[in-house]
Amino acid sequence: MGKRLGSILYVRLKCPEIYPASVVYLADYVHKKRPHVDQWVLDMARVPEREEVAALLEEIEKRNPDAVAFSWRNLQPFSPNEDDDSLSQAFTFYHSSNMAKKAGAAVKGLQRVMAYNSRIKKNLSLFHAVKRHFPDKQIVAGGPAFGLFLDRITERGPEGMIAVASEGESALVKLIDGEDLSDERTAIKRDGKLVFGEKKEYFDLWNESTPVDFDYIESIFPDFSYYMQDKFRDWYEVSVLTKRGCPYKCMFCAYGYIDGYKVRYRQPEVVVDEIESLVKRYDVRKLWFCDSQFYPSKHSLPIVESTLAGIIDRRLDIQWASYLRIDNFTPSLTHKMVESGLRHLRLSITSGSPEIIKGLKIGMRLDNFYRSCRFLVDAGYEGLINLDLSLNAPGETPETILETIETVEKIASIFKPGQVRPFIIFLAVQPKTKLADYAISKGYLSPDFNPLALNPFTIKGLIHNPPPLGRPIGKAVMDAMENQPDNVGWTVLNELKELYSG
Image (cartoon, rainbow, N blue to C red; front, side, top):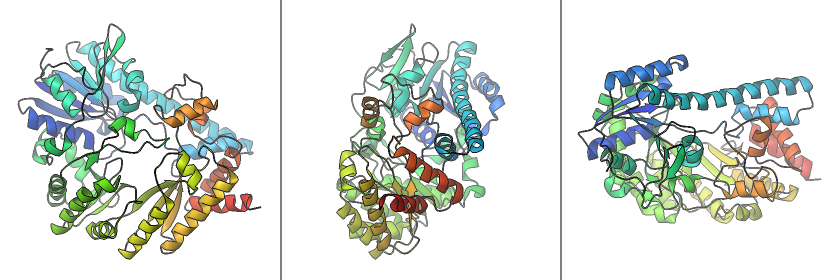
């Protein structure tokens, strides 16, 4: 048995001002399971960068917690998609023939890399500041960043730090009770070495998860009300969790590794109760179901339909969105989706070539996708459809690109003009994925590549866009982002169609 904990200070590390779902769910669960534990939340998103260390030390001095628990949202330097200016700068540097633009992109890219590396060092410096000024405090760290980079971050942390990857509920309760963590996915730094735990079973969302007690959250998280202000109403989406885990093993995706391949659900009535609280207490109208996939497979159908039926039956006036696979849709489900307030669709086909889809192990058939699109039309869906495409996937050829363009045109023909927006996303090479293994085997990355050690040359390897198609595709995307920023997808597809149609 280790030392028991009676109080915890959660520190949400600097990130964009988005709804703090992870900290909210974790603190709410701990309160319900161990109500004697005092908790407090410090949100670094609301603290000026130069004041972070002082604010943290002052809060520890004031609260005197037994443990300081850091929540690190992510470690991705950029999202390789058409909405990210970092991609434009990278492709300008790699593919532009204009030396002035190339030099400007190099400077901006270097500034972004420096800012990214500086942020990592700053977060780590907060860990070390706690250890230096308050050596008796237990330092705990978790969040999505540790899902992929557990070892690389923990080895740079202070002695005695406990890092938790993926689900934190059961691990934190065990830590509070002074129990052993060897059956949790953790890393502990002892005598300069890392000692790893291995998760034995997933957190029981179905039986353990309850609607968030927002009265309690407001009492321990003074900045929570900030995220409920009217100024966010037009664009802001509040996150609600309905499940964890993804059953697919797509070549490029790390969700299954982070969250597990077994899908675990929250009870529909629990989810709907939580949504009702957000609507009636805070006048929330826009929701984001923050699952890896809101409807991952046909096995999810009864639970998803029950959740949407609950929203409809209680007449909750919301608009919602999420990551979705639509290839297993049914007419009944699509009608419930539209009636419950489906706002927009973010759909990933990745490729429109059956050969590429099979190679990426996505587990999708295009005929099922077309059928589901028709179900959406029949249900009266008229919102925007972002159709995510990852050009130059492994095995890509001019012929498969033309297949993809034909597929996108067929999907667009099912809906109203202008309703479908092709959205260019390049495959990011993530550690712990088959795509990383593939990139290493092809020599695009070295076997010991460090995804956290960024420079302009390693970034090129982390965006999967190799030759011989890399240059024409990269140049097409670069030109479209510069000249047609509101219509990048169609502009790129039309240029590649002209290029490869002969």
